[in-house]
Length: 245
Image (cartoon, rainbow, N blue to C red; front, side, top):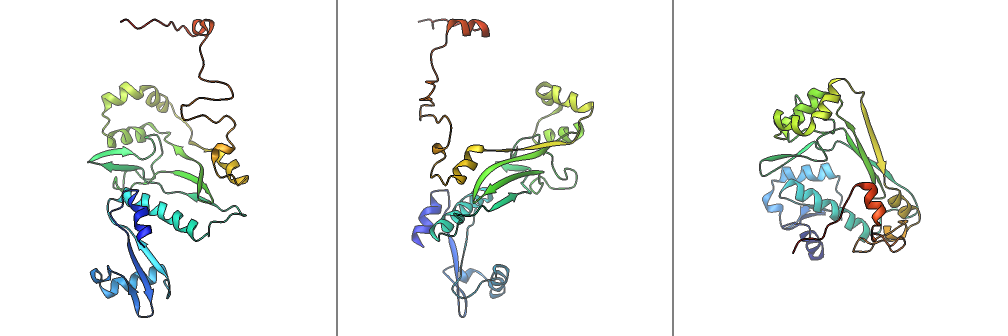
């Protein structure tokens, strides 16, 4: 248990709660803070049997979801229950549209994702039409349906604290295009390198990347970045000048 707690503390956890299912019910250091009826609800909801253990975290939602998600994968690796010889895909959907930090609203992904119901949903409960595809616990890629109506895009900007003047200055080209009509559209992008890493059962994505970079962002195959020829600079209309002393 101590090693489990040390693991989650690396990701911002203050601790790690747990219960163990015994013959006479749930046991653990935190059961004294729960009513018997609440403990029974946990047993029923998780379908616990004698010998099972259940872990939980508490704190800021974003932090808890992050370290509990990591802990789940950590446990699966320790128990060797992640499939090695089969491919298990899962779609992750119903992403939150916004996140609120220090009273400021931010787009969870980007402000051009289509919200499910922008008019009748509280901002902290609003979901977006976005999706990720995961293979054996590894995110392969993701995508979303984009906003194709000007009035919805303007409402999203307002929720993000972007007034009409700022929206006009930064996104006039987009709002003007949407004004004339755009069909519903979206997409999905998959990381080929990640897929090949899983197919070949490689330990690191660097083993399958065509042109891996060093820690200094250098490509040992092409020697990039390298000196730029004068003709190349001239084609791009770029002139280099020495920094004045």
